[in-house]
Length: 272
Length: 140
Image (tube, rainbow over all chains, first blue to last red):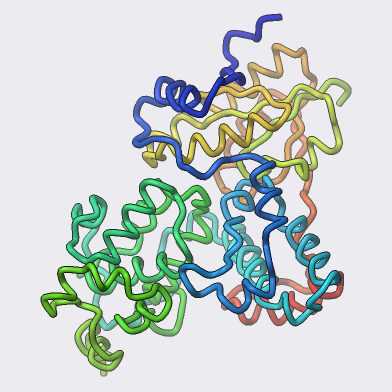
């Protein structure tokens, strides 16, 4: 039986064919498919591979044992309750509660953001609290700088993250934080511009987790702005990015300073 | 409802979807929200990811105005109502009420990550987690 005319196709010989079909269906949507596949099967594989103890030890490193489950959790391919149960099962099989504290805590963050969204609705697009940067909200630009979106800032780290975001739709959480801090504090751009950009591209793009994390970096949902420096980035990303960075070679890396010096450079003294 | 259709949305694209669990075999539809995709300039990779999720679910795939498409699908199947699962996105509430204008709709709650026994303190994660953590681990 032929499917009703309004139904979109469900049979594809290949991912290339799916991509071609999507281009036809959504001609305005930029880019191509991500190498990351959607679907329950892919999610199950990642769920099986997840290692709570290694996650707990290495999650902050770009090459750490993160689960990469976020796109599937965001769209309910796996529910948070299912992931919680899967983690418990692994812990019962070995490791015990201690090995899973960190991973369960991170699932808690996801639940927290969803609860805040339910409470605030579209309010998640507005500052939850005043900024603690000493700068007026009006001093932040409205638009994302084109050099960042096009991965040509000349900073190897930011360009690599920008490219990874746009081509794969996934970024390690630490890279997201560094990039958000760079956008908001170094480039003095409104967090909303960065948040919109992330939502265009992230496969796990969830307005609540995304916007409230941007606000956490910006300091409108935290006690102080989040910043990082070069040694923090090199510790967690390794030194390969800095090794091929022109700015690092020329001594113009904007992150190569102590936290005290960066505080002074980036933020205005608090009003008396 | 004797002859409902299921409306599947982007927060519940898995077998834990309570509408799919409660009514296996009923006609189900997912609608790509064209206005949202255009307004937010959503990239093709996000749409592709969703599409691949949908290909593993027993669901008809459509695009357009979500409420209109769900209602059209319901008419096609001579449905007497729509069953869906709760969503957090405030856009869901708007679509839900647009559907409800013409047809009864039932919203099923998915299994929560944790059921709190006091109102959630959402000012900071640490406060929320102090309430939630012992309950989450209670199931371990």
